[in-house]
Length: 416
Image (cartoon, rainbow, N blue to C red; front, top):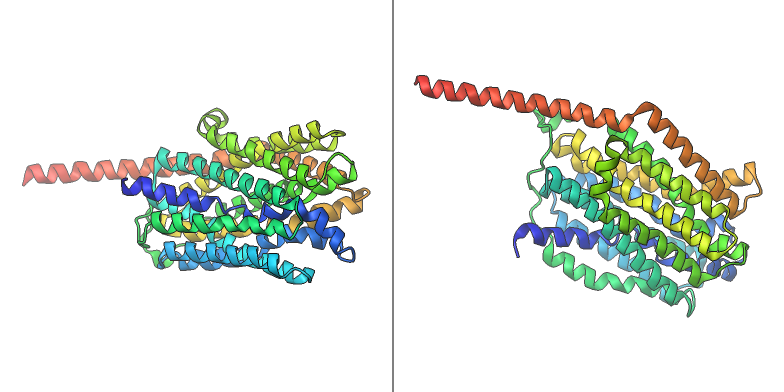
């Protein structure tokens, strides 16, 4: 097996951990029953807190990844996920200790979400890079399905057993250790080459894409954090069906990831805004669901948006920043998305309490409206188009300069 394919296997393997915190979402309602004195938003933080703690590790790893062995950093991240995921199976009498353990899952996840796009940008370029980002989202969805389905089946025994889903990290750790490259100074391809790495400044567009990512993931997280409560409140499902519905959410993301190459050719410079529109439609269908099939339909449509966004955003970032700054740019983007998942129950559910009855249904409706508003704003501003056209213009200038320089060298050689 050649090095490039081996590296790709390693990268796609670690992508499976990106949404591993969904493993315990089927047990959210049962954990709430076990700890009746704990407020519902605190229970939901079992899923959302890892996103917050991943912010810290993402920024730290973004700095370390510039001159440290990324393979060792990735393996350390997987070890943290295993530690935080398995301890609650043995020690589970105190809710806040369980919540503390979920923070370790977040630290590990932050390492993975930062280094996966960075490794892709380092080892692939052009159409192959875009295609690999699409494959990455496929494996993100596969991982989410794997952790959700396994967690749902284990949750049928009891919610404590649900945590054994993290045992799957052991074989994945072995595969990653065998396939990931050990070098940490690989050439990072980009449309830009800075004059001096010491004076690199991140593009302002990176922060704007981060804010857009914050909003998208905040809206999307409404589904996994509320679906178990929604099915329970409407008497159309339990922990097992919540796991099934969440699995379909990510299975749909898998399909859109496989089709991403074709989808992006159709949507072009309107890919990110298309993800917001699809998400809005899916969440709205859930609000009108009075039976499990309709909830599953809404889940499928909403999930379709995930891979479209998660493949496109880091690709755009990798196109608009100098090569050496890609790890930190991805880290900043990951930090925004990490805050989003943590903030989702607080902002969306808090707003639903303020504007409505605070039910899970009102949270879904508010998220749907916000997603449609983002679709409208992005369509109006054409932000994605401006980013990529500006990058293309710079790339064309670089090609012209390189061609002129080559011609001058040829002429000088002939004269001599």
